[in-house]
Length: 118
Image (tube, rainbow, N blue to C red; front, top):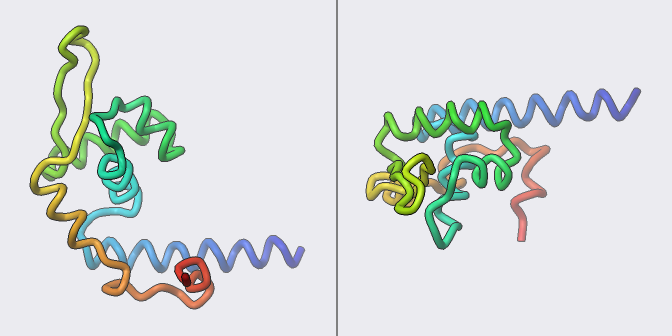
């Protein structure tokens, strides 16, 4: 039972962090995770690749991509060989937003602080 109670505290800490993160940056943690995946990729990525890399469900990834595109943080392009294939990459605004994402602007709950120590 102690493990379940500890997990409840982890979820609570993550929830508090996500609320503070979204309030500070005006994007959700899942949106930021997709932006990080796009930033770390040397090439444009498909929705399927993003879903696998971020471990978000395909439907949730699709929703996050739509939201990020509406916020002008990513750009969708069609494949050259197969026009049905869609690729995503950071827009100039998305690159700028990634440069602004600093954890020191968001209070990290004490329970999570060891994860961010060098």
